[in-house]
Amino acid sequence: MIRIAPLLALVALPLAISQLAGRAEARIRAVFVGASEFDEASLQRFALPGAARDAQRMADALAAYELDPADRRLLTGRAATADAIRAALDDLARRSTSGDRAIIFLSGHGTQAPTSTDDGLEPDGLDEWFLAADAGRWNRVTQSLPGAIKDDEIGQHVRAMRAAGVDVWVLIDSCTGGGLLRGTQATPKSLAGSLLGIGEIAPSRGAADTSGFVDAGLAGGGRLVMFAAAGPGQVAWDDGDGGRFTKALASALEERPASFAALAAKGGAAIPWTTGELSAPLLFDGRSPDLIELAQGLPPLPFDTQLSIDDRGACKNRGRVTGRLPIEAGRTVALDHCDHVRVDFGEPDAPLRLEAWYRDAGGSYSGLAPPAGLSLLPGRWANVGFTFVTRDPVSGRPLPAGEEQLILIARDVAGTATAGTILRFRGR
Image (cartoon, rainbow, N blue to C red; front, side, top):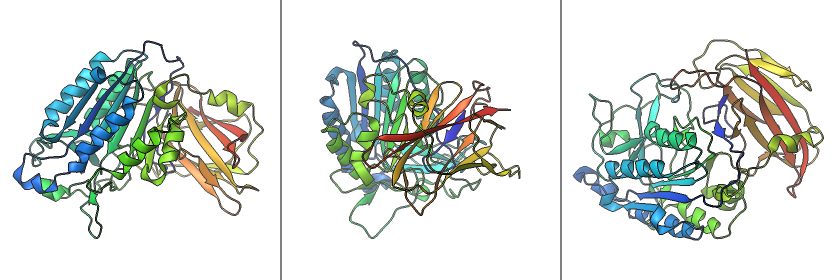
């Protein structure tokens, strides 16, 4: 089992792949939130009218995908309170059953605050918070932010739906931390912690975190894809009429791309952060491709590939470094809990795009490369990485044991799969 981030040897989520084709009677249900106003007087000057337009824009864009008005909940302005958002997510989870598809869209301000416990899902020591219309000041006694939704809470809803066999698509048009920036006509969609009474929010453990708002959404048979306008600690922008991320996404949806990966690629730089089973057909309408079967039917990668193991990932340092190891055909690499694995790729003879997918022992897939693949060029090396875990970072329960695979698929400039390699791992 791994925790990964695209291009970074950090943390994200293992994402399950369902082998069941979508049922004819499967329904699409959605919650659209645009937290565009604040009740708190000191926060009213940070209103984001564009957030309400974002929620409506996405609801309109997805109406063309057989999303019945009765199966959508739209919360904007003063109606987008924390309790209303929680109730909408509760209802979404309660009404969705195996084979259904759920969409969660959030647009508004985000911030970060220190975790109250040693949370293995937050290697930087910071939780992400989405600010609802009734957001207030930080409560130092309870270590909570009134009127805001914490990443773990959203993750728990995602986890419950996936456990029931529901496919989930999460979209976040919000900053997930960082201060207010100047020198631009656009508005950053974040509030500095000092404005909310949070105080010092410097990372407590010195590691980066890119898991975003779906922390704790680890388990379940349903597939999961997440798009975000910014990773934790990064900035998303609103030009007054809405977020750049949402506008690009709504426009790309009009072309009805075949997969989530194709949708992200059409959005380009405006959709900078994605994770999950991006190879799945858009809105999970059908079976996902068998990536292992595809890789097994291809010749091996035409360039050098090496891996190294150390403890620089999401878990606490233990001071162990093994150095680089050659990739041996058929060999299964034994790993300890919290090992960080880095895979380096040599120079190809011609430009290639490399897909990198990790399949854990429970059958979950995670994408380690960008939606269009990792760019490999003559004269330049590249790499991917992940942190291997054998137990759930939240509950401590053991994760499924067995062989796990890193599936590497090279495609030429025309998109044709030309080579593939499968690396195998197992917990000690």
